Structure formats: structure tokens, C-alpha cells
Image (cartoon, rainbow, N blue to C red; front, side, top):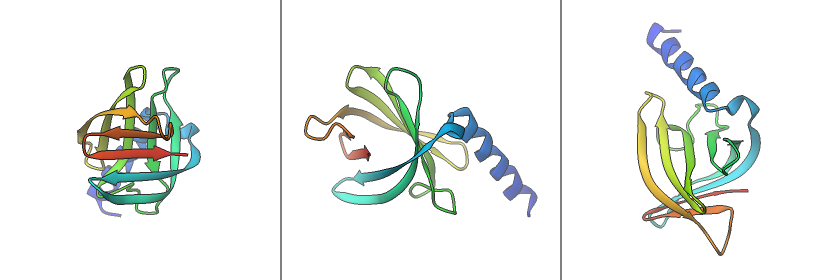
Length: 119
């Protein structure tokens, strides 16, 4: 294994552990960007605290949930409102923006141009 690949793998494992994904449970996820479903399938769901925050991680062998995103997190900022961020394998924490819990399907969080659902 190349040194840079080993370093990236170690960094990804440390990031996953820091997000508490060691206690993850399998769930079904659907991520929509714009009007296009970019991921639909199994994922690891990890609750993060008592406020309803959670993280999602890939169950795919390559370790990506979508594109280069290895972990997607929804952090509660108010009741029914979360801040969504995607963590890349390079350690970049990209802000997707605010999302509100769907009244139609409470398993979904709806942002301005994305939707994250987990069952």
C-alpha cells in the first residue's frame, strides 16, 4: 500500500471514530441533489447526542457515500432544523446548508437544493 493511501485510510478511520461511527447501525439512505437522486441504498447511521443530530457513512467498499463524501452529518441547530455538512476523504468539511425536517416524511431533511432521508 502506498504511503499516501495508507495515510488517507488512517485519517478516514480516525474521522469515522471521531464521529462516533463505531456504534453505527445499518439503515437505508436516499440523498437527492436538485431533483436527481444521487444515492439510494444502505448506509451506516450514527446518532450523535440527544438532540437528534446524526451522521451517515457509506457501506460501499470504496468508502464514499457519494462523490468523494465519506460522511454526511446533520447537526441540530434548533428543533426541526439541522446544519448539513459533508466530509470528504481529504478531510474537507463542506457545508451543504440548513435543512428542515419534512412534515410529510419525518425521516427526511430538506434543504434549499438537497434532501437527506434515512430509514
